[in-house]
Amino acid sequence: MQYSAPPLFKQGIPALAKLIACLVISLALMIIDFQIKSLDFIRNQVNIVLRPFEQLMLLPSSIISGGDEYLTSRSTLEKENEALKLRQAELSLLANQSALLTVENQNLRNLLDLQKKVAFKTVPVEILFNPPNAISQRVVINRGENQGLRLGSPIANDMGILGQVVRLYDNSAEVSLLEDRDFAVPVLVARNGLRAAVVGSGRGQLLQLRYLPVASDLEVGDILLTSGVDGVYPPGFAVAVITKIERNLDQNSANVFCSPIAEVNRHLQALALIYDPQLDAKPASNSNAPSSTGRRQTRPKGQP
Image (cartoon, rainbow, N blue to C red; front, side):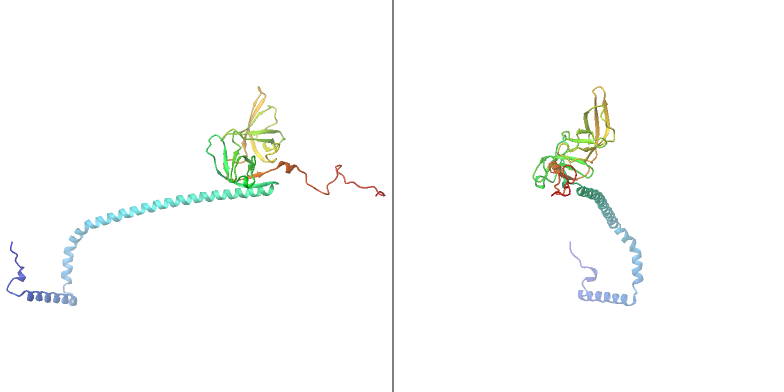
């Protein structure tokens, strides 16, 4: 196929002259348009005619751009919504933690107040965890032999007895709680001084006073305190309250059910009681103590 030159550049007129003529015409039109604005009308009319075609050509791009913006906005809103929900959950947890810290703070204040009142040494302890044993009701605390605890050391809070140390390590100890089946503590009825022993019945079960005579002077609502006769628990600490009495006339016995006064599975802080009944039983030395007769001896007048 033979190539033919455009009509403007056909042979006859030099090509350079034609190019110069086109450049002069272009410059003249540009100057006229810039100075006189004579082509604005033509430009506006052409723009009016071509605008619909331009919009039609840009329509697919606008649709794609709008859809992408919609999806992006929706995705952004969903992410912001998820972030707000997560933040709300975090704030709720912080609020719950704040409430827990308030309860623990009040509990610690009560424990410190108890520590001021007692006449024996106390060691603040914190419950770490429950050993993996579904049968026994025990916990592990963060104090042990190095902090002065001994086997049998009572554990209490401001309301009453929680349990006692049954296994001792250097810096931790295992505590048997009131509900443990192997747990027993000598008690007396605050109303009349009747002595008995409270025995655990298992996790979530009521404590029991077993095999008491039917005629025992017991009533629902009686408060049971530590009697101190075992030499392990200081006397006078609250242990339980009688909630139910079953009297068996045929066997002449009564089963008494009790609820712990101290909330066994509620707080994480408690006190270990370092109690020595032998030291507690020693009389205080006093050089001015009266004689065995209860009177101060005097010498008659006139005798040396």
